[in-house]
Image 1 (cartoon, rainbow, N blue to C red):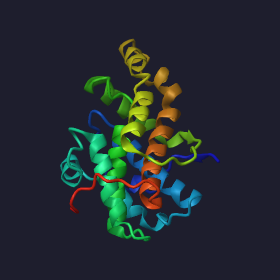
Image 2 (tube, one colour; image 1 turned 30 degrees about the vertical axis):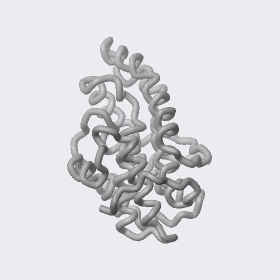
Image 3 (spheres, rainbow, N blue to C red; image 1 turned 90 degrees about the horizontal axis):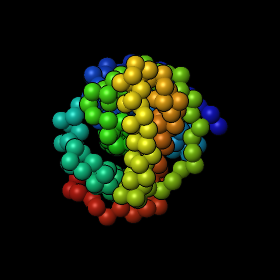
Image 4 (cartoon, rainbow, N blue to C red; image 1 turned 180 degrees about the vertical axis):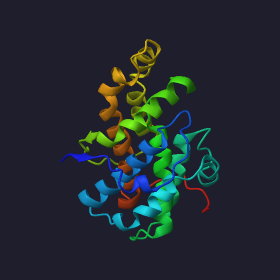
Length: 219
């Protein structure tokens, strides 16, 4: 079933400027919002009514992200694993507004980790993310079947795929083609990968089929 990256609710959120090493704010929020609706529709996990709390979590500034998810900057996969374990322990069959907020925070981190251009450096990464923000509205996605996430192996594969085109995209920017070359052709796949990563992480937490042992103290 095809779906389109959602922006209706996202456009109501005031977003900060893009930073290096991650999707831009509009693309990131659209990715998180799309994952919300995929889980609500395909798995009947009732997240739709908590969309605002989720997007608020996905909009936290960098300082708040590292407070809530220690190691988010220095070891983001470890931070994802720890947060997944914490939220899995918190979940008792019902998603309340605070848990939805924390899912949004985690969704932001997962979107960052799964973004392309992580190896490109700040200059070309920021050019790409700014262009991606202007293109995200029209992206058509084909969501994959959900997967259980064991973070270390899962995100190694995700990052390998996400950065495979980095050098080619940088070359296009250097020669003046910019986003209209390799970046545009790979954009739907990159966005879809991040949506799937967010949805897979949430699915793993809420179905509790994978028991995560790296659980920090509640924050």
